[in-house]
Image 1 (cartoon, rainbow, N blue to C red):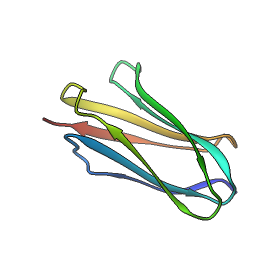
Image 2: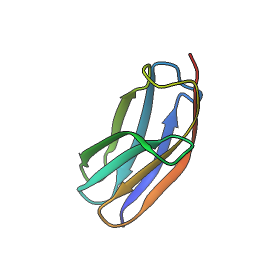
Image 3: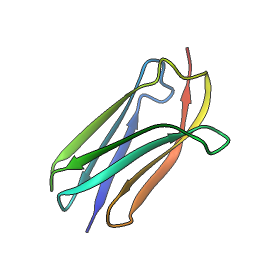
Image 4: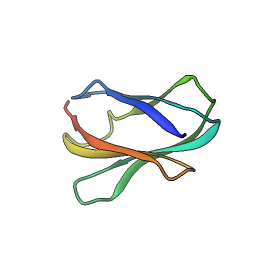
Amino acid sequence: VGMQNCAVYPNPAADALNFVFSSTETEACTVTLLNTLGQTVKVMTTTVPSNTLHKVSFDVSDLATGAYMYKVSNTSGKSNTGKVLITH
């Protein structure tokens, strides 16, 4: 039960960063982008319909070139984390 099939592309990203994921239940999911100091630089909460792929896009053109961490979490407490590179 909960979030599954999380994909992030492109990596590295220059202008936009896309998150695609699905959930077995309709629920709120939060996508957070953090810098290397652990500070939140972008955050978005969205409702994910059950059993469908859901896409969230971030404009990252305003972020400095470098490494960032992402976290996709849902109200059930499940999460996916990873690293992305921003290049300009």
